[in-house]
Length: 487
Image 1 (cartoon, rainbow, N blue to C red):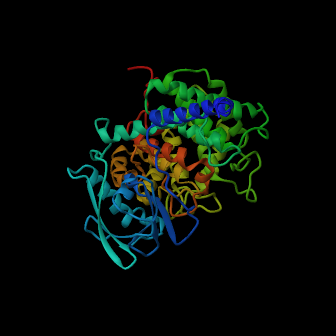
Image 2 (cartoon, rainbow, N blue to C red):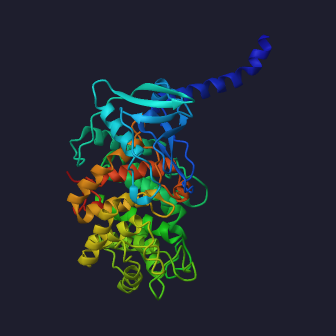
Image 3 (cartoon, rainbow, N blue to C red):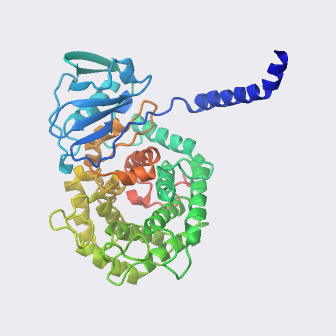
């Protein structure tokens, strides 16, 4: 018996070490954020969404008022309060919500808006109780859910708003905590999703203005340089990473230089911008690579990100290729939809309904470049009028909210205050019980965000929405150089 124990001792010690490491990881990182169980929004009949600090997933069917509980997290507020999978939430805080509508223009109206507002009220009340009534089989049951306390969101998200700052810093700290040794964040799939997604995660970390996070930002930049920017061959736009990778990389590099004054990565910034300029076709269209797809009609979402990269880079000392800029502007102008006033899919489909990402990025680009004021105002007004569509960006909720909110802020800060106030229920539904953000997609296809990775891009999206109120990043209307390193 003793001989068996001796032989097993190395294995037992190894297991003990692993267990200790796991316990240490749990102690260091605390409770893991709840991940909602989502079905990609390709169905025209329902939408799945996170239920905030309840740590549960809800489903809403078009034309119905009841939230169907799809999933309940183990040990969650929802589970402790008696909520079960299959329950149908009939009322929230004693009120029956309006009917849920799958149309993009209805936004959060109905049960989602009501639940988000009720959660904020409950979390800031003395009792911290959320009262709901559910249908379980043939029974109607009242439930009292004890939610974690927190103050209310300030309407305009000033720095003094404790809840906003805690939420913001919690997300950023979590992003730094889960950053991989490579400097990237874990994508939803393999391939090159990690480059684009990591650029936005690093941008979110930068936006927090925490100098202690500079190593994490530099690690992300180093990863992007090695995996993507090194592929670029000067004077050969047919070679290199995808155009949207080059654009996101340039946006991050430019904002980093503007924040710190560090010009170390300026040559990489120049390579990305030159590559994008070399990929503008003769008629101003752009695609994923050098070739313009979809029978030559191209993708305006590439054009606008290129313009944003060029505009930010110019602030860093980059000499913009005006011929490429002007050719691309031909396609941009032709893509303005007569009905929405925003940028559509392309000049061939100018009135495409999902406008915020294209319109927002171009609004920022023109605002930063201080060009074409009438077009800039028109695009910003389109974002304000159609703010309910902010989550809808043709397979990606993330860039709709990131660029859409930033576009409004860069042109009309007062309107931004009103818009962000209306989006508080969304921010509340994204907020997890541990202070991070869960992914909350659109009512349409959001496979692009699944490709990037729901968890990292969801946190980056909410962080950049919150950061949009602080005017630090130039995409948010910032104008101060070296703002991160100077008091």
